[in-house]
Length: 303
Image (cartoon, rainbow, N blue to C red; front, top):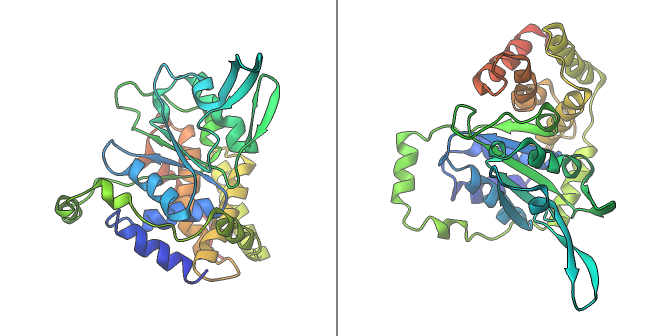
């Protein structure tokens, strides 16, 4: 493991410039078994980041462009009549991949957005009363444009809560843009070799589960969640479990077999900001969600 993370960061930095922290958080979420929501303006590298993760980790990758006329069957698949067999058979949709990108998720109708809920929670889908298991590992990454962009709608709270982290890339600075301009062949940048296999990645996930959580650190996690409730931001128990799992993953990535309070603090804002933002007048305001999460961290004593 000590070699895996540096190799990952080194390889990823050849494609996405000056995004090391975001790359580490993305890897942290996947190692923790969590789905990721990436929110930012068009053209800052959201799709490239997800495609890069699939390439480096050796995952089967599928991309779904969410639009207002997209139907659930376009994601899950459906029953197709086979004339040669004179019978209906199930044709799998793009959700049947190890890493699925739902691009511009908030441009689809609520019905279509909800089609991914079972897959995200149970790693299976049900079509015409029949349940089909998804590949292992399975991750769903959604990207969305800010709410004030034309043609967007708010994701339902049930779906927001299923994303372990929300990440933002931000607009690249001048030096980063200069590096992008100097790179001649953008598409060739993604012609990159995998640094592990899906099977190896699943082994890393098992090792994350063995990272020790002491009683004081677990109480610290619960104190943070309790403080959110005291502030009238009623996050679900899934948030506490996700926070502990993400902190485990961050400790593991830093070659430790136990969680420190610093690990919890590092992942706290990506894990909580999108959940508590729902309790504001503008639930899509990423800045407000971050500020609320920072307020909680400042209010709770560190063990």
